[in-house]
Image (tube, rainbow, N blue to C red; front, top):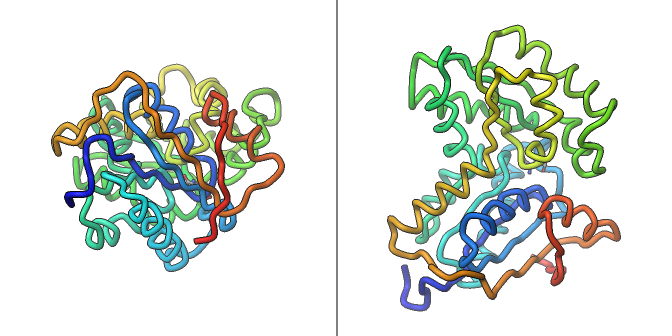
Length: 270
Ligand code: DGL
């Protein structure tokens, strides 16, 4: 850490858009004393259907912006960006860098009894094989069954998180995973925690869901402690939200993801 940073310096979090707010929501719940700066690259969303080269380039630009704000820890709160750009960012930056894949993968490996774990995510995350590789590194005997579920992202943004359309869509994607006999399913996309109850209904109560946003917040807590940079307060004073494009519907959607009021949002050109 450089001298200009202290325990009260903010945690920087970026996502392709607003989905990373599910991670912010968990940080607010579990680490209420931490200051945060959030960047949503809403001008470039979705990342989930773009090439790795493009997502790596966006991730570097986003990190540079957050680092310039004096953050003490960077959280890549986007599964797609974590899948393709984490290693490079860790190499480039002097502060701790965390993604959302390792925490979810670790929990999946820890709780499976059958050794069969399902993962759902965007097409890019699934194509990268990042969850599969992470879990196989942790436990080579694990069998990983993956499925891209692209339509769950717009459903979550529209607020159609339960009801007939959400259930039919989830069923269409999850049926093959159900047949493979998994006992754990990792929600490998920022948007999917909002569809948790529909996914649980469709996949069945005997399959444990792993919410990577929740697991990431726990791992942030551990990383802050290990590095001696926790801010042990009761309520943070700095909660800044930046977007590369602000649409009319942003506030409503963001409040759905965050589960609370979003007051200050600023558009930035990075
Ligand atoms: N944030 C992305 C993820 O977690 C989902 C939205 C997108 O495709 O950009 O993979």
